[in-house]
Image (cartoon, rainbow, N blue to C red; front, side, top):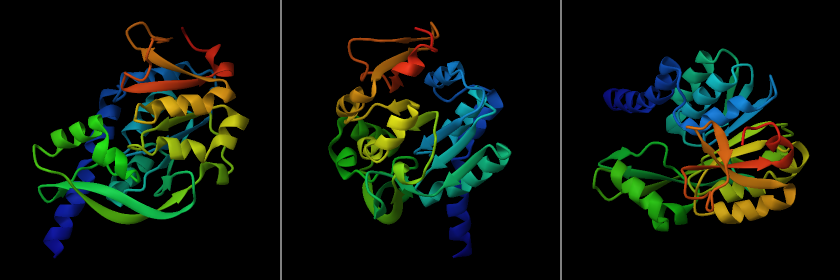
Length: 254
C-alpha cells in the first residue's frame, strides 16, 4: 500500500514539470500569454480558472510579476503541484481546490483514465465535451496512446465567481467544456469590472461571444509574430480566443 501511494504521489507531482519548464525557460507555455504583458495596470488580480498544474499561472507571472494570482482547480491529483507553485511564486499565488460554474454545490467531476492511469488536465464537469466533442475526443485518444479512455467520477465542490466578491483584471478560462457555465456564474463580476478574458476555444465559443457582446466584449486572436491583436473572419479556429472589453481594447496593440 505504501509503495502504491508513493507511486501515485510521484505521478501527481510529475505534472509539476510543466510550470517548472515555463519558469526555467522564462517563456510562457502558450504564445498567447504575451498578450497579458500589454495590460496597462502595474498591479492587478488574475483568475486562473482551470489551473491544471500551474503552467498558466507561471506563464502569467512572467508577464506580470507584480500581479496576484488566484487559481481554481477541482482535480485533487493536481493539488501537490499547485502547492509547490504557491511557494515558488512567493506569495503572489493562492489556490482554491474547487471548480467554477453557474451554480454552487458539489457535482460529479469526470476524470479520464487509460492504461490504469489518469489523463491529467482533462477532467471536466461537462460529460458531453468529453464524449461527443470531436477535438476533445481526438486529444484524449492521443493522450491515451491509442487506448480507449474510461471516465471515472469523483464529486467535487463548485463555486460561482459572482459569490466571491472578487475584482479581477484578467481571467484565463480552460475548463474542458465548462467555460459557458463558469461565465454565466460571473456575469455580475464581468459587468462591474470588465476583465480581459483569454479562453481556450471550445464547443461553446460562439454562444459565449454572444453572451458577452452586450457587455461590449469582442472576440480577437493574438498574433504573436506581429505582437498584436487581430480580428480574423473566424476567431474560434485558433487555440485560444481573447474576449476583450471596449475599455481595455484601446490600450492593446492592434
